[in-house]
Image (cartoon, rainbow, N blue to C red; front, side, top):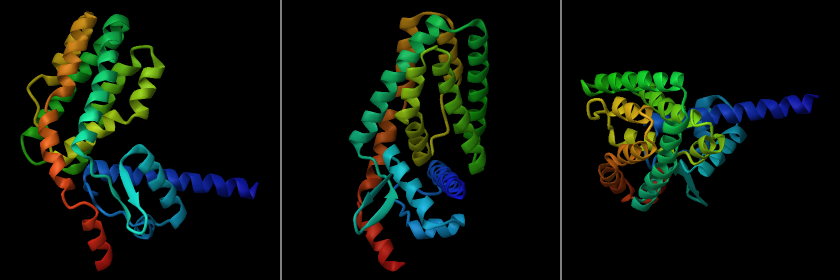
Length: 242
C-alpha cells in the first residue's frame, strides 16, 4: 500500500511539473530555444529531479521541447516546415469539425457557439487596445481553445475531438500566437465563423473554417522561423556560463 501511494504521489508531481512547464511555455515565460535544465526546474518547483524529468519527456513527445545528448533540453524551435505542417494538419481536422457541426449541431449548441464567438471577439478587442497582463492574455487564449474544442465536441465524433487534442494542433496555434505576440484580429473574426457554422451549410462551413485557420499563417512563419538561427549553440553557451 505504501508503495502504491508513493507511485501515485510521483505521478501527481510529474503531472504538476508538466502543467507548470507547459503553461510557462504557452505564456512565453520560456521562449523558443530557452534552456530547461532539469535540476533548476526541480528547485524552482520544489520537487525532486525525477518528476521533472518525466514531465520533460512527456513534453518532448508532445513536440513542445527537444533534447540532445550531452547538450540538454530546450523549448523546441520549429522549422518553417514544422509550422506549415501544423497548420495543414489543423486545417484538415478543423474543416471536418466545421462540416459535421453544420450538419449535426443542436439548436442549443448553435446558440452557445454564437455566444462564445461574440465573447471571444470582445476579448481580443480588449487585447488590441493596448498592453495586457500576461494572465489576461493566457485566459483569452484558453477561451480561444475552448471555442474550437466546443465545435469538435458538438460534432458527435469523439475520435475527431481526440485527434485534435492528441495532435496538439490548438496548442501549437496558441504557441505561435504567443511567440509573435498576435492579439489583433479582424472585427467579428470568430462571430462570423460561428454564424456560418450555425447556418447549416456544410460546404460553406468547411471553406470558412479553412480561411479562418489559414489567416496569418504566412506572417507567423516569417516571424517564428528566424528564431531558429542560433541553433543549439545558444543553449550550449548558456550551459557553460551557468
